[in-house]
Image (cartoon, rainbow, N blue to C red; front, side):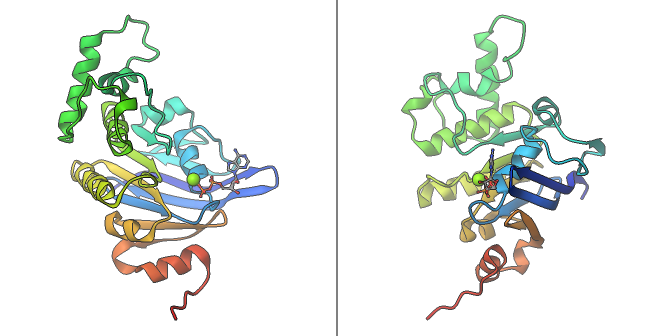
Length: 245
Ligand code: ADP
Ligand code: MG
């Protein structure tokens, strides 16, 4: 498989805090790649660099589909087909599902908003994943799990090649997590590359092809999910052996 994205020697400092130190990451096209690590290990900073909202220190390299970038702007990241779903989802609560999904394609367009076009885009994205969403409901009326699906549909409407989800399961029930993991498997089957950021070991191993472990801003390594278990992963994330009494 070809690499969709390659990061090499990525470092980022915030004052005295070394959020990332010499991190490497390769994302193959069509894989589910989990970024695992404890709170503060640098997971969100890494994806913000991929989103182009944070610039790495000079010296790092970013290659996307063979194109080299010293760092990315948000616009370049989007143009490369990268869509990020942040933990807060960044939806407009008082707009409808259709508006949330279809509007992003219109922002910055000099044309008047074409409502039938927005509805067409939204319907296309919802049908692509077979989601059961009422397009005319306001997002604020939906439970969190459905808002998550709205955010995924919005990413798909943006012609995503890579969808990055930052801690997507944080406020979901076990059943909702199952639905989301199934949706991730469906996206993968369509050739979309998925990055799934999490610190929950069980779901990491359930959904991922590969796991990259961060600890204190350093990359511990990238592992095949089949060659690793939760105990080993916990050790890699914390550096501590776990003993069960
Ligand atoms: P994670 O997502 O794994 O919890 P983060 O990438 O959010 O970790 O944070 C990594 C480290 O960088 C933490 O010590 C955090 O406090 C620090 N950090 C992240 N963003 C900023 C920022 N904008 N300003 C200052 N420190 C930050
Ligand atoms: Mg985070």
